[in-house]
Image (cartoon, rainbow, N blue to C red; front, side, top):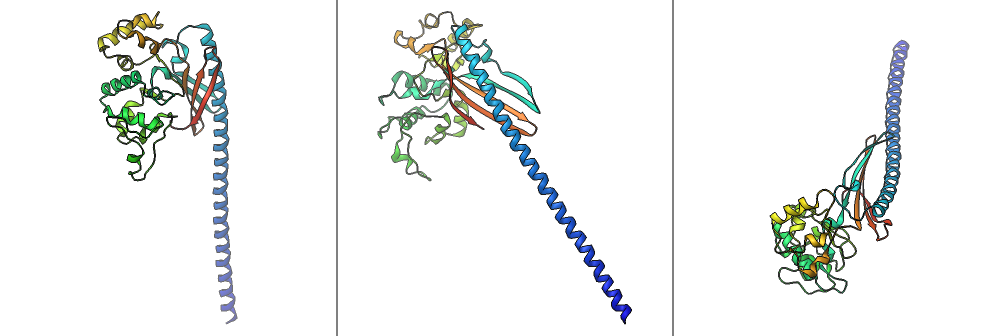
Amino acid sequence: MNNNIKGHNKGVALITAMMIVAITGIISSNLLWDNILDTRRTMTTLSRDQGVQIALGVESWILTLLKDDAVNTKSDHLKEFWAKELPPLPIDGGEVFGEITDLQAKFNVNNLVSSDGKINEYSLNQFKRLLSLLNINNNLASELIDWIDPDQYPTFPGGAEDDEYTKLIPPYRTSNQPMISISEILSLKTITKTDYRVLKKFITALPSPTKINVNTADPLILESLGDGITKNDTQRLIKERDPSGFNDAANSFRSLLLPENLSKISGTTNYFQLKLIIRIDTVSITMFSVIKRDENGNAAILRRSFGVI
């Protein structure tokens, strides 16, 4: 009897010991896994912080280069250093690369409405021509004007003010101020994602009225400048500006634009966008910077964002 009890006690003790070992193993594994995750999160955070600092350093370097460019050249064209993609540069644990875009090569949507709230007829006609070239409904121009202008009177035809947007689900109101980002266009009543993907390549949203830099503008932007400009004209213009831009932009467009509209074009730019991609280990950071360069060549950051623009 006693031997049976002793054997039973030994069995219980053995099972208990095995359970303790198993539980200890599980706890140890969980602690080890948590430690691995914590270490990984820490490394990711450190890599991200390092990437941001590298991006800011490259951004500062680009500002210096753009200032030097303004001092050394009288025009901005597609053969300059900034118009080429930045080749991948090795950094500790990864690489950085990117590109600079001339924002004045695009149509500035804020040109549609002047500072006094009135419609800029030349810009409106240009934008309508651009929409037609892209096979997008011209009513989008009226919707865009109503989104920017300060009043609540719908632009004819096709405009939409608060009374239209407040009927939507969910309801919202028009901005009634200049756009900060072209992504705001996705808020317009009739815009489709397909139209937006087509249009965003050709437009920008800048804080002050801008001219089109014809040295860098896409052929469709050049064609949108005037009613009488044809594809043959744009092909001739593209050849003429190669490789270092127009010698005299106003003279090259004199037969294509009305005299009062020659002032709407330029061979230089004041606004650039810098896109940087930094990859360190498994971390990837994309930074966008809008740069303004003044008449003296001084360059400064207007706004900066991370992620998809």
